[in-house]
Structures are given as structure tokens and as C-alpha cells.
Amino acid sequence: MNEQTAVLVLIDIASRSRLWGFSRYILGKLPFSNITGLLFCKVLGSGFEGGFSTKPSLTKQGFFCIFDNKQNAEIFLDSAPIIKAYRSHADEFFEATLYPYSSRGSWSGFSINQLSSAPLNGPIASLTRASIRPFKAMQFWAKAKPAEQAINDASGSILTAGLGEAPYLRQATFTIWENLKSIDDYAQSGAHLSAIKAAYGENYFSESMFTRFKVGSASGIWQGKNVQIP
Image (cartoon, rainbow, N blue to C red):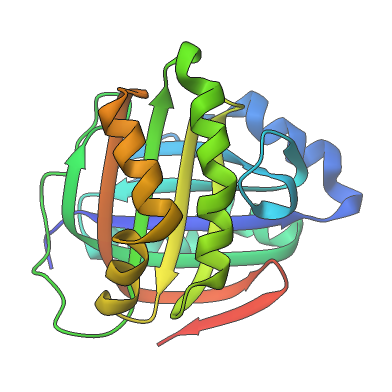
């Protein structure tokens, strides 16, 4: 498989490693230098308790990477020193290998442009990220909490994470769903639909990217929940 492949990792930093965890934000992408096949990388924080909040979590964080192919993504997860370091400093560690099949928009000018075939069945992951216009931030956050509650109440939701490149203004949402129907039912109804209509209708974002993925594999613990796919 030569299509671009994504890796999403979520971590809850152990209490003994708080300083190491904070240093991740200072170092940023530096520990990811010279990794074979790496096209794009973002080191991310998370909202309070790993959700969607203007209050940042002191321990929960993650990163998102795009590789040029599946093989290099798997080598990274299997043997990269930064992965081993995160594992050794984590109370919770979750990783997913993802194959994008639908993507629009960009993230810091980067667009996913080598897509996999659409899935026929099985779990679906979604990543939504946006740079929020400062004068639209209050309206955005007023919509965010009801949308989060709607995810928690939705049928077929496997995992959710509220992530951020920077507090308040550069936000991302990552979710995994049991199948295409469950994510479409959520996306096309209720608080999420209202939030999306407002975002586009009122021009909330200066840049955004919306991507769906087939889940190649996903394993680990996030928010106390053990997830294993397949």
C-alpha cells in the first residue's frame, strides 16, 4: 500500500513524568526529526480530562503524523525512540494506524492528497481540525460543549479525544466509530450539525481540515477505556 498513512497517538503522562511531559511542548517536532517517510507532524495538547475544553489538561496529550506509506508508519510505531520514550512516561498510551480515504482542506498548508479506497465496512475514524478566527472564538466554544455531549451520547462511538495545537484557537477532534452509519448519523444531526452549519455560515475558521480514515489498527487505553481494533 503506497497511500499516505496516518499515525495518531494519545498519552496520559504519568505523575512522576510531568516535567518530561511539559517538555514535549517546548521541543515540539524536534524529537521527530529525520524519521524515514515522515511528511507531516503536529504535537498536540488536550482539553481537561481529554475532552473538549478551554481548560487544558495537565497530563493528556498526543501527536498526529502523516507518512508516505504504510510500511514507514509501522516501522515508526514499532521502533522509533520517541515512541519508546512516550510509552515509558505514560499511565495511558493509545496508538492508531489510519488510512485516509476522504479529506478536504489543509493543516498549516499541508493537505492529504494520496487517498485509500473507501471502506466497505468496519470502523471509521475522523479528524477535524481548525484555526479559529479570534473574533469568532466565543461563538465556536458555545457550540463545542453540546457537540461533545452529543458524541458521548451517540450510538456507535468507540473513542473521542479533544486535541489542540494551541489553546482556544487551534483545535482538533479525533473520533473512532463502529461503522460508517454511526458516524454519519452523528454528523448529520443534532448539535454537531448545528455547529457545522454555524461554522461555515458564519466563517469561524481561517483554515480547516476534515478527514475520514479506515482504521488499520488501534490499541491501548484512553480516558480509562481499553480499545483494541481489530
